[in-house]
Image 1 (cartoon, one colour):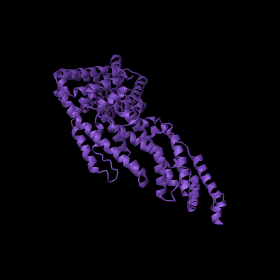
Image 2 (spheres, one colour):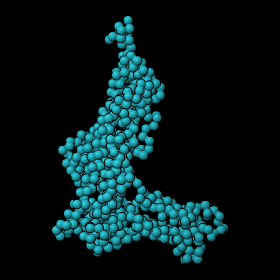
Image 3 (cartoon, helix red, strand yellow):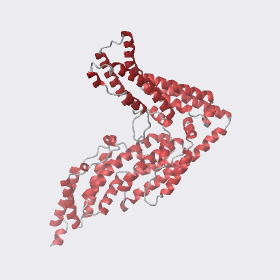
Image 4 (cartoon, helix red, strand yellow):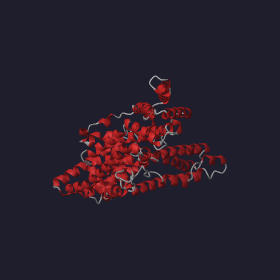
Length: 505
C-alpha cells in the first residue's frame, strides 16, 4: 500500500507535491530583491544583518519541509525549487545595476582606454555584489539547509552565485589582463588587484568547499594574471623612458612642449572647482608636483628656470589660498583691534560677543570643510600650516586677552569662548593630512578630480600593496606573490621617474 501511495497520483505523492508547492510559495512570498544601487553608500559597514534573511518562523517551516522531503528521497526537488527561486530573486536584485558591460567581447578590449569606465564600474559592482548579494545568499542557504549538511547548502549557494554572474565578473577581469599593455592599463590592473585584495577574506569564506572549486580556480588565475601583467608593465616603463631620453633632440623638445601644455591646462582645470579656495589648493599642489621634478630626467629637460617658476607659482597660490580661505576670519577679529585703538578701548560687550560668536561659526565651517582636503607634499603642508597658525592664533590670542578675559565685570562673556589659543593651533596644524582613500568606489567625479588624483596620489597604493599578500589556498604561493610585488616595488622606488612618464602621457 505504501509503494502504491508513493506512485504518481498516489496519496503520499500528492502530499509530497503539496509540500513542494508550499515550499515554493514560502520562498516566493518572502524573497525580496535587494536594493543594490542604494546600498552603495554602506561600503565599509557590515553588509548584511541577521534581519536581512527570512524571519525565523519561515526558516523553521522551510527546514521542516526539507527534512520531511529528504526523508522521502525528494531532497533534489527541494534544491531545484530553492535554486530556481533564489536565482530569480538575485536576477531581480541585479536589475538595479547596469551589468551589460560584462558581456563586452574580447575584441573590444584591444584599447584599454575605451573600457576604462567599465573597469571602474566592475570594481564598484564586484564589491557591492560580494558584500551584499552573495553574503545574503550564503547566509540564507546556510540557515535553510542547516539541518541537512554543509555539502547541500554550499552546493546550492555555488549554483546561485554562478547564475548570478560571479564567473562573468572574473572573466571580465581576465579580458582586461589580456588587453594590450599601456601605462593606463597599469593603473586599472592595480584597481583590480585592490578590489580582489579587499575581498580576499570574503572570497575565502563564501566560496570554500568542493562546490566552489571552479570559482576559486578562476579567482586564482585572475590574481596571477593581474600581478604578472602589472609587473610586466612596470618593467617596461623605465625602458620606454630611457628610450625617450636617448632619442634625438627634437624628441626632447617635443617632451618639453607637452609638459608646458599640461602646465598651461592647470588654469583651465582649476576653474572646474566652484570654490576659489579649493581651486587655489589644486594649483598649489600641482605646481609643487612640478617643482619636485628637480633632479629627475624630466626636471633636467625642462630646465632650472622652469622649475623656479613653478616654485614661485606654488608659493603664490599658497599665499592666495590662505587669504581666500582664512583672510575673512582673521579680519573679523583684527578689525576689533583697530576699533579699539580708534575709540580708546571703548567697545561694547554686545559687539565683542557678536564678533566672537561669528568667529566660532566661521572657524567651525572652514575647519570642517578643509579637514577633507589634502596637501600631499609634507614640506608644503608644514609650511602652509605654519603660516596659517602665525596668521590666526596671535590675533585671536590678543583679541581674547584684550576683550574677554580682561573684562572681569561681565562674567558671562566667558561662556562664549569655545577655543583657547592652544586648541586653535593644534587644530590648524592637523589640517591637510593625507588619508587612505577607498579605491574603486565609483563616484561621478569630474574629470579634473581624476587627473588630480593621478598627479598627486600616484603610486600611493602600490607601495602599500607590497606589504599585502593575497592568500587563496596553498596552490597560490604567498612567496610567489610577494616576489612579484617586490619586483614591482623595485621600480616604484624610482617614483619620480614613473611620475614623469605618466605626466607626459
